[in-house]
Image (cartoon, rainbow, N blue to C red; front, side, top):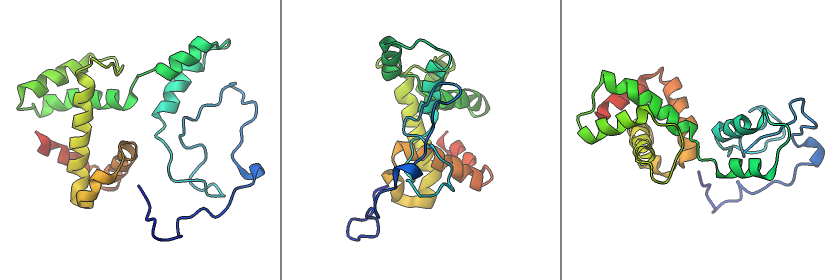
Length: 184
């Protein structure tokens, strides 16, 4: 989330000496992947940031590269142009069985959930499943988070939603998941 700009409280306090920065040298598996995801535990000192990306992109890059030993530019191009979406595939996998428990009233929604069942996780530009999943994610998160955050729900970026929603769900003992039923 953005921070207030009318105070110096959020200003940089200086630079961390190079020796204190996280380091990995010649890892056993021969691969370092971060994709801006967390590289240190929450108790790491000195403080680095709270603005990490979700780890699914790191996991995907790892999946694409970990078993290759003679990497070429084409391998890197494949990583850079990869559109596989773990979050969307996860949501699709949750919607399919949920729709059996609580059948959507809208025929279009039923059809899109049915298409989600066989979706391969690739977010192609011509996919009808991806925009449906994105809209569903936004609607579900708004439904879950708006009672707590009100209109501030809209200020969260999509990257922050995933872990935040998971934390809310954990903190409420799964009660937040019950809110999803209200969408139907």
